[in-house]
Image (cartoon, rainbow, N blue to C red; front, side, top):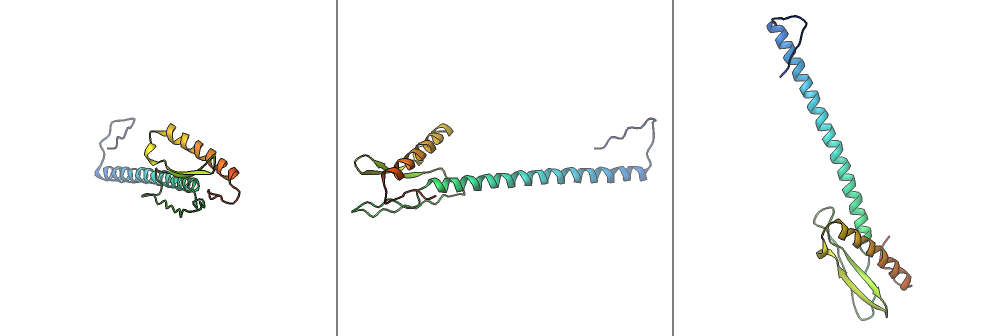
Length: 139
């Protein structure tokens, strides 16, 4: 719908009506194009953020399992989408005990995940300082 205001009351000719319709159609197309470009830019920014988050998540996952005499350990992490919600870690415990832990079942909000990231950083620091020959976390 296009409203045209004039100082005086007028009767528009068919030519003027057609011209106003053409101007309105071009304005509508320009508005729609701007909306689509804005959506495209926002989607691209979100895609970059997801890719960055996936890269950070991949860095949090141990690249190789620790070497434990008598055990052959292996691990694979393949998220269903670009970004997954499950984590695992190998944790060095006092007395040269190690534990593998799947953190994926404890997803209860951002506070829980932030706590996991904090613990992951702490365990990586403990692991690299407590073992001299094996480094569990790729960098």
